[in-house]
Image (cartoon, rainbow, N blue to C red; front, side, top):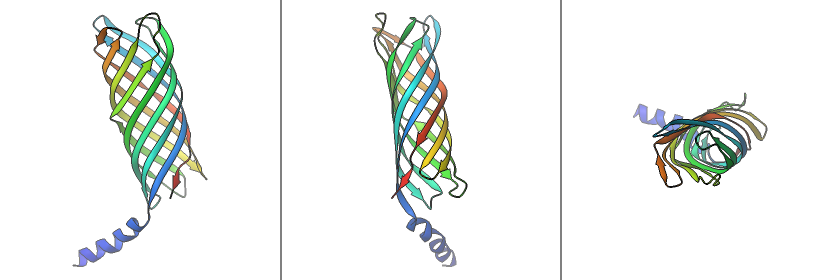
Length: 185
């Protein structure tokens, strides 16, 4: 019984301080890409602006967890077919993080479960990278109602097509800089 009372005393304040978490943001990403084909490996870049939204819960202004959804319009360049075109990027990832309310430092990790890069058709080639999965690690500094963020992302795309051809896989690794506006209700 002592342990049950102790658990109630410790756990009740944490539960009573739980809040809904809402964080819209703007990002700039710069990722290096590699596409594996039967002929070898091509390299390229995927750079551009995006928007994001995190929804979830925060507990005692220290822990936060939820879902991170992103959409970006980028410039996708690849050496295999000498392509350079605008691309639509989207991904969805559950995340968990910690923050120090007084200092303003925030750290989080996310695992992308769904994502794709869909470049516009160029030079007769219609690329598409789909079925993304991988890790995203981030750090931010929260000042008043703004968070300045830096993230590293390493994603693997299990389904890659170039017109009628199915390619092996692709990777996208790189950094994203962002500004977000974390709000708790």
